[in-house]
Image (cartoon, rainbow, N blue to C red; front, side):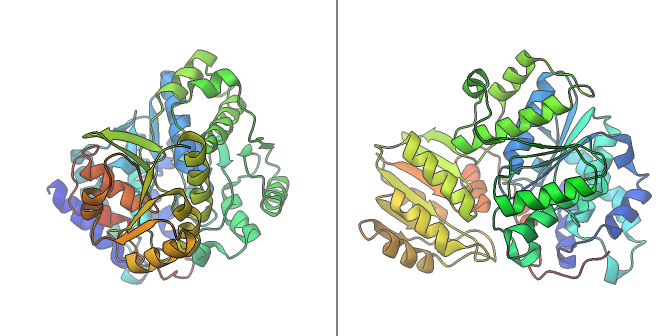
Length: 428
């Protein structure tokens, strides 16, 4: 089997859509010898900031000399980004080996209960991390928490970054319903850390932690020492909040995984997380990349722009998925730019650029708003002397990073982020 054939096999698993429930994941893990029982995890859920918090935890523990596994989603360009050890992507030959192995196990499932793409790659990641004897695995939920495939592990700590409205068709249409899904990662007696400050959501987390007798630590947004804040390489006030959460987690786990302050500082200094307030300079152009794929993320981007680039002329390249609250995202981001270029996202779920442009014109009548057929066309039209902001979807940011040469091209691999958007019934 070639790597391209392994990716094609994973691509075929999209036919089974996305569904909640742990039954298939547990069965597949059992066939693999239950690798999750051979590893230590920090399980991270939340609406925004999961990936950045995971990246900080990974960087700190790697700075402490540990072999650290990292499992995150979605990927920006290459499938291999999702599964890393020591911030090195899983090698192509390992993807091939694991897919070859898992194809045999998957034959034991009936077609009407076949594991989904995410269920399969979750157990593939467990197998890879176990095979390579990781000291600790930073383990990000895919969607929600309670019935997410990642929830078959018993972690050293459960981390919930924050709660905001996103994926309402899956998780519920209120903050407390969403919080209940995220709080599903809380395990009996296992410490919980959260930076959630929304009262109704925090109340749900507190209630769940109490029921599970899980010690709960709440992290104040301002709780980050000046020395540590100065070390942090990621931009934005929200990243300081994520750092405070990561550091609280490290502190709680000091007995199991000792880390020194110099190692923490080194970890924060060298942490990288592409596509989140990432400033690139190429051919004399300054381009700021940020997913900002939901309302809370758009607010964080707007605040960061106003604070860090108050006097710059700005161009906004905006592409959003149709199943997001794209009207409100447009209303939040349109006022930050003098020029707005609405583009399609490379996804069958893209919002129509003409509709984005219409909302942007209403939100910022003074802006010059145009519709582009592609990101390449928008790049050709962006003014040279402006700060250009690419935002609205991580898929769009991934395409930009590929076009700008930050990532090598990965044909069709971005399409692996797609799934059947109709929620199917829980499998358990």
